[in-house]
Image 1 (tube, rainbow, N blue to C red):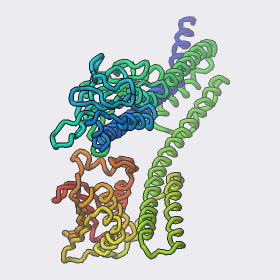
Image 2 (image 1 turned 180 degrees about the vertical axis):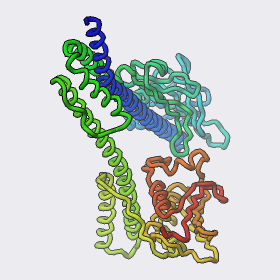
Image 3 (image 1 turned 30 degrees about the vertical axis):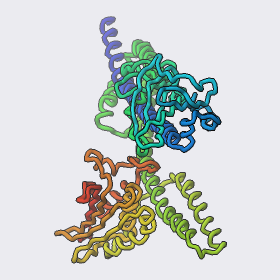
Amino acid sequence: MLRKAYSINRILLAAFLLAALLPVTVLSWRSFTTARESLETEIRRDLQARATATAAEIDRMMFERLQNVSSWSKLEIMQEMRVGDVDKRLSRFLAESKASYGGVYVELDAVDAHDRIIASSEPGRNGQRMLLGGDEQGIALTQGDTRVGRLIVDRLPLSAKIPGVVEGQNGGTLYAMLDWNQVRQILDEASVNGSTAALLDRDGQLLAATPGWVPIDETRRITAVAVSRGFENFPGFGWQVALEQSRAVALKPVRKMARTFAVLLLVSIALAALVAIPISASIVRPLARLTWFARTFISEQRMAPPPAGGPAEVRELSTAFGQMIHDLERLKENLTRAAKLAVVGEMAAAMTHEVRTPLGILRSSAQLLLREPGLSAEGREVCGFIISETERMNRLVTTLLDCARARPPELKPANVAELAAQSIAMLKPQAMKKNIALELHLDDNDATVLCDPEQITQVLLNLLLNALQILPENSRVEISTRRETDHLVIEIADDGPGIAPELRERVFDPFFTQRNGGIGLGLTVVRQIAVAHRGNIIADKSALGGALFRVTLPLDNSP
């Protein structure tokens, strides 16, 4: 009897654990792993975004400093070196230039061909020799007519040749000692939430780092590296910005949750063992039914309540299962709602972007009107109101992330060639500012299709605006249409820099952009409209050497 009772207790305990604790354990573990992966992904994404922004900020700062040195070296006042800066005009200029930048430069020196300092922002340096020896490390690069010397302690020498009176003559060299703490300050600003940052050269040698930085360790730290991409016409030096955050610190909330789950599971196991032994004889049958329910619930996904009956403990367990089913259903609804909100948010962002297009046209039109010489004072005031209000609306519209639904196209016959001509007419003032030629090439066939004219105009405006914003001056954009067997093909081609082959599909992803100031939604909206018309859009290389966007619309768009 004792042996039989012991066997019943073991069976009861095992059944209870399998029926009650196993699903909870699986769900808890899945919740823990999902939370850990999601948190790590978000942290890595945040680190990558901050690393990219920091690299861009360092590129911008270096570009500005190199521009300073290059422009100063060509000033007429630099020719004071020929007379030894006898009236100290050049020295005063250097001192004032240093002071105007508020600590960006440690020292500015004008040095003759024999490395003797003729003028300096530091009066005591005049007449001394320019020595750049010492604890040098890392950098030795040339950019245009400027040179970046090797890092000396906390100073980075930037230099540019001073042109002589006779072409080809060495008029000396202008040195600007950049305070390297400017770079460290940028790294410090990127080091938030316990992360550390470092600047590495193209060979991986350390140039600057925040306190606590250690070499990249993927096992113990979450890392992100961004490579310098340059700024405007400055290609950059190929430096790398690395950000790291300790996994132990970053994932501490998840580990705390795991410990809580573990304690709860241990407590549940202990209680199950204590309850199962004394009441095994009276709950075998209802427990068996409950065990069967628990075994089949996950696979069959039944919404029926768990079986009732048996002792209070079993009834309580049945109630607990019912609550768990309810919680699971509520969790499922929450996940579904979150997915819908994500879609709504994306569409709202797309709508927000599209509002900016007419606002931009209004602003450009008002700016164009302001150039009219015969415009009255009242007209200029109204134009000013238009410009200020469109800028205000442009800021406000970014906050519009309310619920949104994509408007289905209202199909009716429309001549795409006429829509293209109207789009070119609307954007012609913007094209004229950069001397960009907008050309329309049509075949002899009819370009009428069943479509939503407003949405197709939106497609054309988006593609043309993208080209106008990216292309340099004196460029060319061609719009052409042609009929094929069962489609109308619209092509927008330019002679600009084009799109890399590996990016031709990604350009349609939401929030993917390579243009400063863009939000990466224009092409996403274009594809949505094309797909809604049962058509398509692809990016390719144009015959002009730049980018090509090919939109296809079915000639018969009936459902």
